[in-house]
Structure formats: structure tokens, C-alpha cells
Amino acid sequence: MGYGEMSADNGAGSASSRQFVLEKEGELRVEVGTDAPLRLRLLDGTAEVFGAEIPRAKWLTVPALEKIAIFTWKGATIELDGISEVEYVADETPMVSYVNVHAVLDGRRARAKSGNDADSSQGPRVIVVGPTDSGKSSLCRMLLNWACKRSWIPTFVDLDVGQGSTTIPGCIAASPVELPLDAFGGMPTEMPAVYFYGHTRASANVELYKVLMKELAQTLERRFSCLSDHKAAGMVINTMGWVEGLGYELLLQAINTFNADVVLVLGQEKLFSMLKKDVLKSKPTIDIVKLHKSEGVVPRNQKVRQQSQNCKIKEYFYGFINDLSPYTLRENFGNISVFRIGVGNQLPVSIDPIGAEPVSDPTRATAININGDFLHAVLAISYADDPDQILSCNIAGFLYVSEIDFESEKITFLAPCPGELPSRILIIGTLKWSDNQ
Ligand SMILES: Nc1ncnc2c1ncn2[C@@H]1O[C@H](COP(=O)(O)OP(=O)(O)OP(=O)(O)O)[C@@H](O)[C@H]1O
Image (cartoon, rainbow, N blue to C red):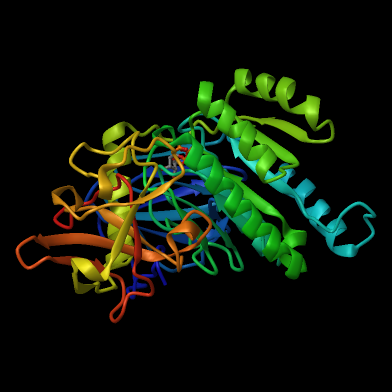
């Protein structure tokens, strides 16, 4: 179990505990700080956190930095114990409009599955768009959880390279969601299709981002062609908050590439009207739906985003609750080949392509020599057998460069599992991390 781990202690709360009685459709919003633990339990009624049902009477530990909404459809009593930065009850939420969207999607899934729809056995492909901090990821979680509760297996597609909900930041990925997600944090990791972009901003290499979206979409088409229940359940696609200029072009591209038929626009009238004008021309049957942003969404500054990126990488190696132990791996320089995609536009000057031939093709993979800039980098292990396949190949996992010894020509990695690397072809981007944070 990951996030939402149940505490062994199911006894009474401490002196610091307090109770909140929520009316029907009420929401308790809680923001947890850096290192203050907080527990919650449902004493009465029913309640959910972003669509994940909370079990009755069990203490749940809310991890540091989580910002959550405990929502009830029919009324509930919640007990909190510990320290939070913010906690308040709200009675105005957009939840009814969100669940109405779910009901429409549910009907479309049933039609796709029944085979009565002559046009398609494809379930809805929903893309959630909106500026930063509009609640896109939270809405995706709700739609996925509600679909799972109805026994569908929707595919979650994460195009937000800044957050990396499915794996780590710097990737675009997709994964089927077979069971409701845990109440806090983690996203599905079953059968993930992961492509390494290598940067936490899509602007770093827009052409590469487009190519990887296409690769991911093709992988999903292949999966859907043999998994009819996945196909009928459709997709829920999370996007970046970059909605201006080139970012907007990428959104249009995502809608086309994944053949989305429902666009949910959160919290921005301008984006909604631009999409209606630009998308309906070429796809007149697409549904573009405007939804209110929840007042509860917590804006995150650059520092908080950086912290949460670091947390995601740490979680990959050490587990969500420090329940994993990574392995140390020492390799001779000569045993691995490291490639960088798009050498020429974003490389630090010190990372010289082998042969020093300047290239500007943003999607070209070029072998590079190991040098000082590799220290603290997070590298992806490609499934490619050949450098020409790097762009089209899924990722087997990630390595963190903890040490480089140039004299003995050895590089030390932190790896999630022991033994031989599944491939000798590694990819480097600009993603860095420090094990000490
Ligand atoms: N109703 C709510 N009450 C309390 N916190 C909330 C609520 N909705 C969302 N949040 C929190 O607000 C933060 C931002 O929400 P979310 O990640 O869904 O936004 P986003 O639009 O996906 O962000 P990004 O700009 O990174 O794309 C998250 O920490 C989330 O848990």
C-alpha cells in the first residue's frame, strides 16, 4: 500500500483532535505542512477524497505537503488529529457539475461496450485542460475513481511533464486504472507506457514533446485494439497548465493526437472560447465543456513545485513512505551508452556530443561522453536495442547518478532494483535531483 496507508492505531484521537460535521455536499479542505503529520478518520456518514472513498473508523495518515478536500454527498463527521496549516469547511463546490460529467461518460462507456453504437466500440476520450492550478489533476483523479467504482478500467494519460504523477517528472505516460486510487498522492503504475522527455518544461523541446505524444498515442491504439474493455472505458488525459501561445498549440495537438472527443475546460473563459473556435471547425462533434474551478484548489509557487518534483523522484527510489531501498550500481563508462535527444538547443556547453558535430534536430538522439554535468542527473533506461529506436521505445526505469570517478572511469548509480541493467542504452535530459534533500 502506498499513500493513504492506514495507521495501526485505530484508537481514540489525542487531545489535539477535533471533529467536523459536514452537511450534504459539504467539503472539508485541509492543507498539510512540510513535516507536520496529520491523521483523519471518518466517524459517521460517507466521504471521499478526490473520488476515493474513505473507510469508516480507521485513521488515515495524510502525508506532508498534501492539500486535500474531504467531500461528502450525503453528510459525514470527520475527525482530524495533528497539525495542519489550513482547515476549513466549504459548502459551495463544483462537485455536482463534475459528477454530472461522470454520468454522461458512464453512459458513453456503456454504449461503447454494448456494441449497439454502430460507429464505435471506443469509450470517451476526455482531455482536461486549464491554466496552472485550476484543479486538472484533481478532476482527473475523481473521474478515474468514479469510473473504477463502476467497474470500468479507464486509461489515465499524463501529459504534464512538470508533475509526473504516474512515474517521475520529465515523462509522459499512460496507465490503466483497475482499482480506485488511494485517497492521497500516488497514481496508477500498472502496465505503464512511459516515454522519457527529460525536462520538466514542455518549452525545453517542443518538437520532442510532440513526437513523444504521437508515440504514446500509437501505443495506446495498439493496446485498445486487443483490450476491448480498456477501449470501452476510454481515456482521461491530464495536460499542462501552459495554455498560452505555443502551449495552446500543444493542447490542440494533444486533442488531435489522442483523438479526444470530450474537452473539459477548467476555470478560464478565454481558453474555452478559443478552443470552441479552433477545435469545432475540424471536429464538429467534439464536446467542449466549461467547468468551474473549485475555490479549494491551492496555488503552488515555483518553490513548492520544485519540492513536489523532488518528492516524486525520491518516492521512485525510496517509496512513498520510505518503504523501498534503492541499490547502488557501479558501471564502467564503456559498459553504457548515454544519449541525449535534441543536442544543440538545450545542452550545457560542457556536454559535448561525441565527434563534436553540431546538430540542431530536436528529435535526434546523439551519444554523449560522460562528464561532470552528469552528477545528480536522473537518467532513463531505454528498452531500445538500437539508438535509432530510442524515440519510439518505452522506458524500463530510471537511474540517479550519485558519483563519477573519472580516474577509474566508473559511474555510480542509485537503481530501484539489483542486478544487471535491462538495457545499456540510457537517456539524459536536464532532470536533476539530489539524494540529500
Ligand atoms: N477542493 C480542494 N480543496 C483543497 N485542495 C484542493 C482542492 N482541489 C485541489 N486541491 C489541491 O490543490 C492543488 C492543485 O490542484 P491540482 O494539482 O488538481 O491542479 P492542476 O491544475 O492539476 O495543477 P497544475 O498547475 O500543476 O497543472 C493540489 O495540491 C490539490 O490537491
